[in-house]
Length: 247
Ligand SMILES: C[S@@+](CC[C@H](N)C(=O)[O-])C[C@H]1O[C@@H](n2cnc3c(N)ncnc32)[C@H](O)[C@@H]1O
Image 1 (cartoon, rainbow, N blue to C red):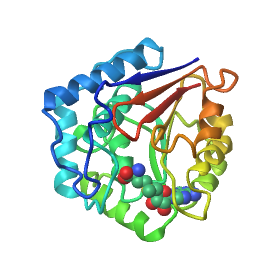
Image 2 (cartoon, helix red, strand yellow; image 1 turned 90 degrees about the vertical axis):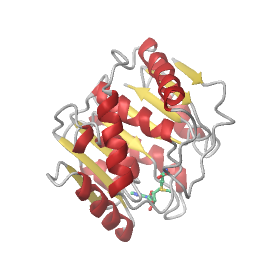
Image 3 (spheres, rainbow, N blue to C red; image 1 turned 120 degrees about the horizontal axis):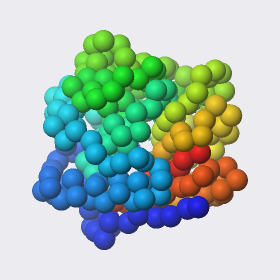
């Protein structure tokens, strides 16, 4: 089954990609919108509950602000909170984030299991970035926040990494674009490469379910087909969107 959660103001809620930390709304409003999105995911059976540690989330956000070099990003504060909360609640043992650019999207997911936002112990937290210079930047950023080395960055093609993966994939985050001409169509290639290692109950998150919906058409058809995924929820709390699919 596929459903949609839409905040009533998603079209008015806008960020400046070059100013990632700018406050866009009162914190209470951001918390409420994300809480409503988490409730929709709970109601769809994707999450067991909606509780996560607010203080740890803010500690995580402050550390990223202080320590990360982010040239630009389309991850809004709402999306950052949503990614952190989904991971804090679902607690994936093995995380793969594909197309992590400077590492911000990777740490928005993995920050629930490493650094000042840590709230559970994961077995492996991996980010994959095909451009070596961006992978190196992601590695520098992540290492400042997580000196313990819990989070790994691989300079590689995510299709190949997922294909060669032998353990379960408990959460797969997809955000590849702009390399080798295939762009967002690569989401489906990566998913198909790892599909057999995604166990029942595991989550696949796809950024840009709204503003790249046309380019993601085949991907969205695949995850919204009950033959492939138990359920899929399009979470529309900003202009980018996040498709949350559960096997
Ligand atoms: C545009 S960025 C995502 C930015 C992110 N949405 C944000 O707002 O911070 C997408 C990244 O995917 C990377 N990429 C493209 N193809 C890839 C592949 N096959 N494997 C791994 N990374 C890839 C690109 O190099 C790029 O850094």
